[in-house]
Length: 451
Image (cartoon, rainbow, N blue to C red; front, side, top):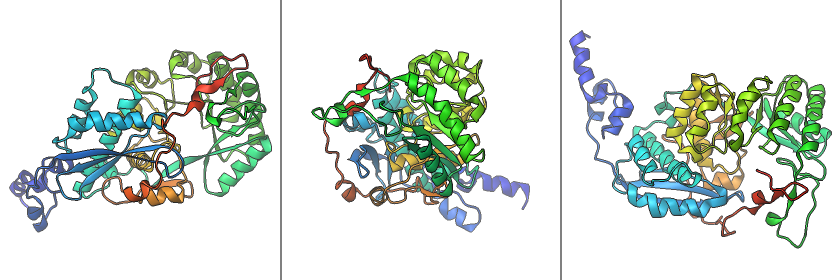
């Protein structure tokens, strides 16, 4: 082929980059005779409806956003789950974002995100963040479906074959935790988070002995927590685990922000000999000013960020290399559009991704995590979720967890769907949907503890 023929080919629709062609209402490009047929313009696309679906097939309140378009059968799904404020997010989407979005072009993902972000003067909160995230993920899902490609391809293609994950384990004793770790290894996990109950205290991530007042509803009972016994116990647990399970498994732990900063700094130093893969959330978001002091005194890898909303909360931590893993909850910070920018920023500062992924991320949100993980060169690890059968039924196409790896489908878009009829069989029943448990952790003297 002569050079002038290449110029002619490049001038046609078949020579346009895929995302540009689809965004301009053109069919995905292709070379050869089929390219001319695919180069014809597609009808303009508009958002015709936006709605929220609230469901809890695994007993956890989930919020999913569905964006419908003017093309018959073309819609997208996104995760907007804020479990303690599900109805507030529902209102934000249905009463405020929906009227703003009707008639917009769903292919203009960045413009929709930017305009929606400033559609209310006060911003950077978890309610608006989750509402925006649900819409944003749904638009990427629509783009992938219209392009006929999985979202990870639109993000630059796979950097790995599958997504390595970590699993949660816990127990009441050192021996219980040891058995749980060995069982997780047998299931194929290479990265394992360990938590252990502190006797008599309401310990995060583990069932521990605790005082109970039977005349008070369980989610309103005072939960007693003291940091001292916990920080003295934890290094002993890791010493036991390294002695019994060896060095060929990566161990993780979540402090969950529940100790004073000076104790957290000492804990990080005490844990150094046991070579953690990371220690999560040693400080609360209100105490991020301690990270520069922490970096100076320990080499324990630090993960942080699941409570972050505002970029100013994490920009300096990344750019000053004060953390090793970013743990943000992508449905809280604005969706795929925001998270992929964070991942790109982290790449320049040797910070790896470890997106938040517990049960209060919907399967749609997990699918978005996995697609971003596959396309992110500085991926670190992904929190895993073993979906229940009810979740798999309500959300056909859940990411598959095999041998400790998440696998995405190659179906267009996020590769996951929602059976609304089945979702309706698992309604949110505890209205108002407020989890009072988080506001009832207290020291023995009655002082409130940050979760």
